[in-house]
Length: 318
View 1 (tube, rainbow, N blue to C red):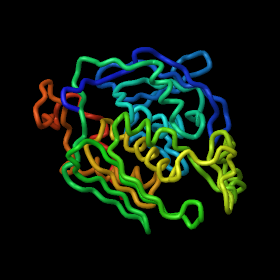
View 2: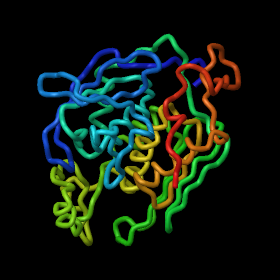
View 3: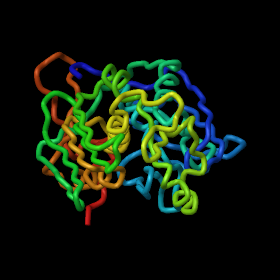
């Protein structure tokens, strides 16, 4: 963290697959970006022309049912952005352009391992400007029924604490807590796959979801067993994937967070509500940047400074 510079990709790289909900083939291309650009999604036509563009921040979220959807006043630009966002944030990629020629980020194997591999293949390069962060200085909590999420101050970087509870013998109660940095993300989180229940398939299909789901990209659970031939990658793969989703959803702060995030029985909607509540309370956070010299504390950035993270003016939470 100390002395850290902003990063971008050293080279561009393309990734192809299918959307887990749309079932449609899609190619996305990751391209280098300039300092302070953040993560930008561009919807492109078949001829490569840019149709629409949106910066990945909390204001761009248009839906959170089963996936995080980004868009603008004209409607959605791309769905299921969370796994790619998790890979970018987990590997400390600050600035990147994501060009996508379909309605949904490809699901790949249901985790973000393929995106991690692509980022590694492209390589990272340090830029001139110091990395900036959103430091949480006051706890913000949102509760909904028997679920809750909270962001609280944390002096050692970014931490995620997740708990889930399913009335299913293969899941039950699972909990995990990790400080998130590239090594822990690669080893503990990146390979955890999205999961679903066989009993819900017909309902999802009729609602227009999971049209591209297969055993190759989704961990499928029957009443008493995992149906995927290879089984689980981790004994607690289910809660690890919830951490992956949370990292991706919280990447929509627009800058890396210095905070601990606790989520209990949460999902995309709750993640978004907590982040929106944080952004709506200017007394709960501040923007800081990594100092050029290895001193103990990060240097605050004036709230009125040019280039302040766009997410600073996120929506209120009703």
